[in-house]
Length: 273
Image 1 (tube, rainbow, N blue to C red):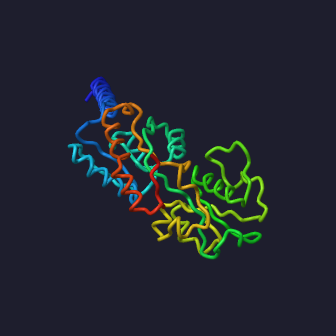
Image 2 (image 1 turned 120 degrees about the horizontal axis):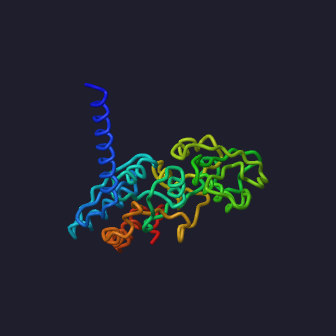
Image 3 (image 1 turned 45 degrees about the vertical axis):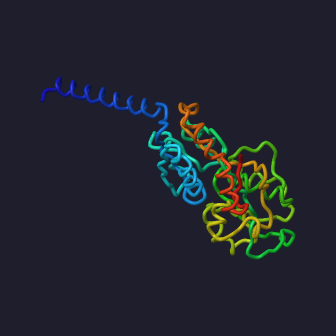
């Protein structure tokens, strides 16, 4: 093959790659189907709720294909590149951080449920039993760490600096009267590390997985009514106004789903609609 032929072949391959890329982008931005959509959720409560939504949708001829994930990053990547139509698992603060860090063109469309965070202990029966220099734990991921620190602040244990962003850490504590030692841990590991600390701020999904109930076991917790950290259903920005999104919202916000949430999770997870 001569140099000219190689050049033509390379140029043809490049054009083909560009065409395929353009097709992929076009497909990802097309209106979502009113007959079948693929939804990504994390395993556990979000999956359970989606299964109930799927039953309601099936009665109207809308098929929900539920994809279950075991991490917090993949569902947004899958949504952004088009292998999911929607996802349901995240707070707005987490979504905004992901968009800023990854450049995803995805947006929230409606609230679903809230997972109130709680302070748990294997050693204490009351927060007042904390002693000088006790070790206390918080999640180490952005957004959740600030959320946990705000919970300690609301409980009267610390004071935070003003004007914090979602990337705040324990270094942003302004006042710590008991000189508590804040340990930053992977959120999923907090329940298993509970015996090693005096107190830990644990996300409800991980607390439930360890058999902990926010109403029965938490020494202090976020508000369960009008919780400031609701979870959202998220879609690609181009699909925000699609008809099926409003249809999906009608199922998630139905009386049937509200009743299912209230009866299944006993206050550990609450409707945010």
